[in-house]
Image (cartoon, rainbow, N blue to C red; front, side, top):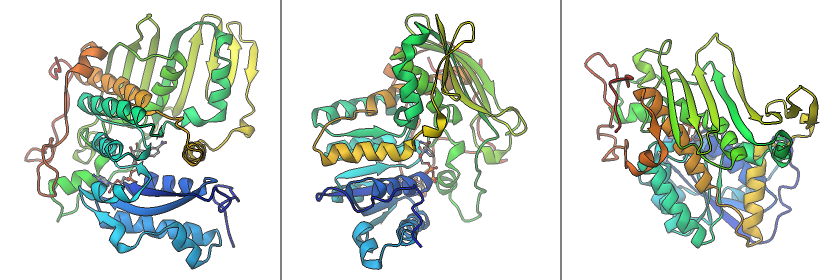
Amino acid sequence: MAVPILGRTNFFSGAAGEIKVAVVGCGGRGTGAAVQALSSKQNVKIVALADAFNDRLENCYSALNGELAERGLKESEIKAKVDVPESRRFVGFDAYQKAMPFADVVILATPPGFRPMHFEEAVKLGKHVFMEKPVAVDPAGVKKVLDAAAIAKQKKLNVVVGLQRRYQTSYRELFKRKELIGDLISGQVWWNNPGVWMKKREPQQTEMEYQMRNWYYFNWLCGDHILEQHIHNIDVMNGFKGDFPVRAQGMGGRQVRTGKEYGEIYDHHYVEFMYADGTMMNSQCRHIPGTMTKVDELLVGAKGRIFCGEAAIRDNKGKELYRFDKKQDNAPFQNEHDELFAAIANGEHKFNNAEYGAKSTLTAVMGRMATYSGQVIDADKTLASGINIMPKEYSWTAMPPTVPNADGFYPIAMPGKTKYF
Ligand SMILES: NC(=O)c1ccc[n+]([C@@H]2O[C@H](COP(=O)([O-])OP(=O)(O)OC[C@H]3O[C@@H](n4cnc5c(N)ncnc54)[C@H](O)[C@@H]3O)[C@@H](O)[C@H]2O)c1
């Protein structure tokens, strides 16, 4: 029985021209994005897979085949949609370079540390891109993405970044009505929840393999949760403001998630971001079980407020000015792919999300640098700093940039001692 997981029935009804896709980073999101690409109305075909690890790649291949089988496609039809023979399945740190040439569009869904080099390669090869957020983990990576974004624009490549609130109807409807609150003067943004998965160290692993498997807890791979998750909320405020903060200062630490298995990242951050016109964004993110869960944005204007999670707008006296019926909301992950693949099929150049994706990445990186150092962090100085936290060499025996001490604990940033400038 065909179960269209994403509720779409128009699987084959696309344009005649085939759009070939390579997936780089075949984990949860890479697999999900590939399904969404296949579920767009266009004639999409997955032609190559690339992952650092063979088991992750094979799981993705099986999941894509399984998804189409569940939708009732025959074996030959599945093969036509997921046409990835062994010769187009690539494993290792250089897998991306081998997979990309086969595609028109590349899906970039590795941990974010690799995004700048993968995006740069995709643009060099003239590919359209869907890439997950964040788009880098450090200032040097942000700069690389901004430079590649400028070239992508010249080459008229469509680039969509997985900051999906920008593709969500409720947010778009609120955005259309943002003048109801007058000038935006401040905002509160939250990503507070119990936290995410952790992968235990296996005895045979090299340090590089361990960190690659347990990537969430290492900054060169993940950038800390203020970047990896909270970027969504930060980007909402940046989007409504139409600008990006020039300064950040804040505080944070690790109070609960202190074990060596949690690498080097903090479990809470609180940051004040300031825009050039003095507008403030107060940002908090926490990964601590048993505390208040809240993932939301509140935008405060001179005349009223936008409550994003509620999808409502009220004036300063509390009178409701607008409410979007959330039952009518779309599936934004799907919409990202619907809009991207439609633009490509129609030969249009519509999306250059890499620029705002990079700038919101920089905002969150500044937040991390502010909480780690306790210093005021300036955006221009940060971008110009060239700070690069990536490894010098990529191999399973190379040493990652952060290594544990004799007891297995990693160095943790310490406000007052950690310095960037
Ligand atoms: N938009 C969203 O709401 C959303 C949701 C989930 C994840 N994401 C983003 O998607 C990205 C991936 O997250 P995930 O949850 O799928 O993680 P995951 O661990 O499930 O998948 C990552 C995959 O990338 C592979 N990989 C690592 N380094 C690689 C390299 N150099 N070359 C090729 N493959 C490599 C890993 O082996 C793994 O299979 C992250 O940036 C994350 O922030 C976005």
